[in-house]
Amino acid sequence: MYIVTLLTSPANPSLSREAVEALRNAWGGGDAQWLATGEAAEFMIGEKPANQWDVWSALQSEGIDLIVLPKDARKKKMLLADMDSTMIQQECIDELADVAGVGARVKDITARAMNGELDFDGALKERVGLLKDLPESVIQEVIDTRITFMPGGKELLATMKRDGAYAALVSGGFTAFTGHVAATLGFDENRANTLNVADGKLSGTVGMPILGREAKVQALKDITARLGLSHDDVMAVGDGANDLGMLGLAGAGVALHAKPSVAAECDIRINHGDLTALLYIQGYAKSEFA
Image (cartoon, rainbow, N blue to C red; front, side, top):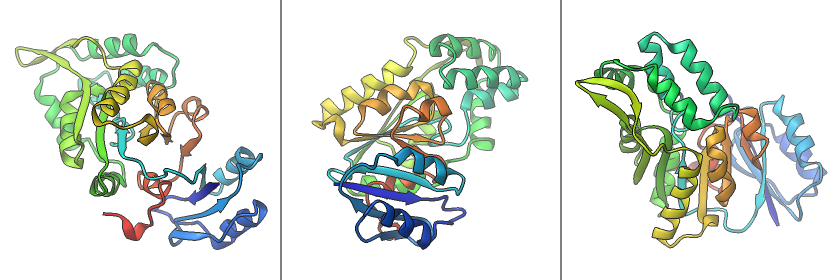
């Protein structure tokens, strides 16, 4: 058995009863359950529909996300999350570069790296090199004035942790930012790269080894082994090419507002919802959010 979830942006809840019932009838589903009025609904079907992705494509123009997942083991025991453009709305290195006056150049490299067009390690070294001699104090300035959290993140962490889940933040970004994000949202641990500093200035180098795609996969393996969990117990979420390894290994890999080349490789694609979508696809109603 499978659960079909339909959801929209909580900021503009536009999911109609007609849209839900039309798909339920077409796929021969069970009675629809509303998880949040105008925002998210679900129903059960017997097997995966052959035209799932055709319907998904058609619904994109209506601002509706469509997810089809197995009925069993929906609620996950661990959340493994990327940070930049996932738990926060920015790419931290782009914000640092903007302050340093090299924003446009770095943003181009970032976009190409996240789309899988460039080697992650090399792209990171090149971008960090452009930050050389930037005062270390700029990191806190960026945190205070430029970093905003992705909507739904606080509810996601609070709800999953209330129900006993473990939460880990793994980023190709930097510990100076993951520490702040992890503490604010309630992650149990965080892993990221280190910006090297000398005499109060960024040295233009990054600590080795670099945490990239394989390090995120290893984090999933290490943490699940330590906690006695299976990979199927994990919900992973990210948006870039360096997240694909962990998204593919996790029981539920969510491409959130992801680059097209990344989303194309994932079965769970959230383009319109926010981070509360990760609760809806686990079967939580909005009234159950912490």
